Amino acid sequence: MTTHGHPQGAAGTNLDPWYDNYAERSAGLSASEVRALFAVASRPEVVSLAGGMPFVSALPADLVTGSMERVMRDQGAQALQYGSGQGVPALREHILEVMALEGIRASVDDVVVTTGSQHALELMTKLFIDPGDVVLAEGPAYVTALVVFKSFQAEISHVAMDEHGLIPQALRESITRLKAAGKKIKFLYTVPTFSNPAGVTLTWERRVEILEIARANNILVLEDNPYGLLYFDGAPPHAMRSVEEDGVVYLGTFSKTLAPGFRTGWALAPHAIREKLILANEAAVLSPSSFSQLVIAEYLKSADWKGQINTFRGVYRERRDAMLVALRDYLPQLSWTVPNGGFYIWLTLPEHLDSKAMLPRAVKELVAYTPGTAFYADGNGRNNIRLSFCYPTPEFIREGVRRLTTVINGELELLNTFAQTAPLQTIRAEHGISGPPSDLG
Image (cartoon, helix red, strand yellow):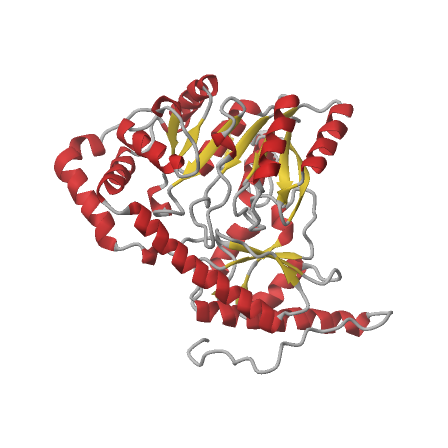
């Protein structure tokens, strides 16, 4: 029963009269810095180095429209109908071909198609996490994965990384500490290849060692691999799933190597987990889109999809190089990662700066980035920034870094105004670099 549209007896808030009725787990749902930036970053005058949007304009439209036309002509009734909760068999067969490029050999029966790999991650979390359970996650970690884990009331424990990826000894120490505290560790979440946000890649030796640690401690590994085929200067190590079948659930997606608008990903899981994933998939969405699956299957059958991935590599390599050159020219005193693939560079600021607090100044200077704190559940990453090079043109990337330099120096000068010690050094770009292009706002 309600009174004037409000639930009877519910206090609510001024903005949401249903506030007191939400489930406790909804408290873990909060807008990430990435999501909050999209409204600003979409303005044409803003150079966005924030979002990880693929450059889908590099995909010839006729490759997609041709596949759509053939599907509707030959399989139209099936494409517009409900489908299996596991996914279309033809697409699952092609997914095996895709994963084979990273050393994975599997059965089509062990593949579950999902509405993007993000959906697979949520299903896995739903299946495994009770409130208070621990998820081990590399630090920094993919921001929306953290949102998913929090939404199921998981405790997130970060494991340190370096330029070679997750540090095995840090993983051992985390497991020992958590077990001593009586914590229940459910799985390790990692993006081992061209990680989001750090851009680093886990070495083969560490992959093997981390799998051994996980096996010895009965910890499942979630290997999230959106970027593995988007390498620049030589292929990365094979997937962790290539050498461990029973202890790894592999998450893949077509969002980065085709287009995110299809919202199609997959999970490759051991038999028992696969069966529960199918049931969870059906409970959540009944079935993934038959239309999207059939179009992708037709594309993989008829198009030179490996050549198209190579085209994407060239596009992203050029933009990675443009960002590295701009960072060297404008911010030579800072440090950053040098990715061999993927979408991201991880920038380290002077320790006195706070990237989240600095963001309003950046927006005023018409440049957007993602603060490092977005990628930690514990408040770390304050003096880090994730820079995305996948979407802007090389010219806009350079201009964005130039504007970012203005922001950083403005913050340093402001701190100097109130400093009680020696002044902080502002950053001076190298001599002889060109100014911004005249056609940039």
